[in-house]
Every structure is written in structure tokens, then in C-alpha cells.
Image (cartoon, rainbow, N blue to C red; front, side, top):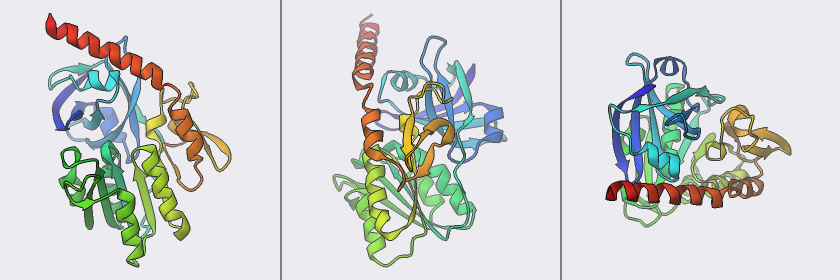
Length: 281
């Protein structure tokens, strides 16, 4: 069992957990993830390690309550426990001194963009971060991103805070201003990552995306996270989760990511019904 040290909501349905996992805390690197199982009968699901404290023996994860398991996780509080955590898994982010590096996080993807931005800064890069959300209330890790950035930008779709528009528009604005950008990392919803790839493609800017959202069992055995990269079949969990954005077949990726929408909706509705019955009791 893994004890939860702290649990706080960063925004609606987005919760940050600090969990005791000393062996993982010592070994994890930027870009890696863990597989969680809330209880012995629950499903396994991946979450990126947002941070760690080797001295305290803790890791930090951030979960958005989008489905049954993540909503169940977000009901946990400090002092509660999680049945199983396996990690660190996945290939760490490739970090070097590229020059000027842009780290882009869309929504809860900022939880993945943050540790990589920190590693890029530590490697000597001039780091620009773009933190995007639909609205001001959903912006997360603003101060943390600023702390590891030479320039930090917030974008909101509705213009309620920061730049009025999408992360891709802010990135395009930076490119159009004549800024020399050497490296871009984008993490968030699949349509956003695809759009970032199309912004940087004409300028031949090295661009990486994290395909964490399509992972299922985290071991490569289920085959659910197959993705076509440069006309080759890869598995996001064991070959990634980060890949060259200009080589990813995003159409195939989008189609595959929608395969289990019906089953996910059924599971979520059943969990919501169970919660309502529990409240009534």
C-alpha cells in the first residue's frame, strides 16, 4: 500500500497528490510515468510523475477526474492509501542543451510539461513555457512553471486570463516575431499536439509530443497504445511516451483513441450512479 501524504485540488476535477513511494522517487526522470491501481479490483491506469522528493521519499502525481478510475482516485484524501503503484516506467525525456526550448502544456498536460521544462532549464536551455487552459479556473501550476522559465505565458480559450487564444496561436506569434526556437515539447489533448506539430513543421523546428493519453496497461502487452511513427508500429508505453511530432500519424492515433469511448462512458455512468446511492444512504 502507498500512503497519500497530501491531496489538494488545483482546479475543478484536477487534484494533486503527494504519495510515499521512496524507490520510485529516487529513480524517476522527467517524462516517466507510473501505473496505479486504487484497489485490488480496480483497473490499472497511467499517470505521469509530475515531481519527486527523494529525501522525503515521495512522488507527485496530478489527476483529472475524467473517467471512473480517476474520479475514484480524486475522492482520496491525505492519510488514505493506494493499493499498487509501479514505476518509473517509460523512456525518460531526451534532455540536452538545445538552445531555446518551448514547453507547452494543454490543460492537465501541464503536469507533464512541468518536469520536462524543469529538466530543460537545468540543462542550460533558455526555456519558454506556454500553459493553456479553457478558462482561468482551469489553469494549473502557474507559479511552478514560472519558476523554471525564462519566459512564461498563460493562454485561455475564452480570454479570461492571459493570452486570449490557443497555445498554438501564442507559439505562432513567437515564431512570427523572429524568435529562434530550437526545440518544442507539446503535451495535452491529441488535437492540440497535432496542431502544434503543424505550426512547427514548416519551420523544421524539432518537436516532440507525449502520447501518454493513449496508454492502457503500461507494459506493451495489451497493444492498446499502438501508434504509427514514421510508418512503423510503436507502443507509447514502452517505446515512448514521447515521439517526434512530425512523424506521428495523428489521424490513426485519433481514431484509435476513440475506440473505447462507449465503454468508458458506461463505466463512468455506473460509478456516478454508485456515488449517488452512497450519498443517499
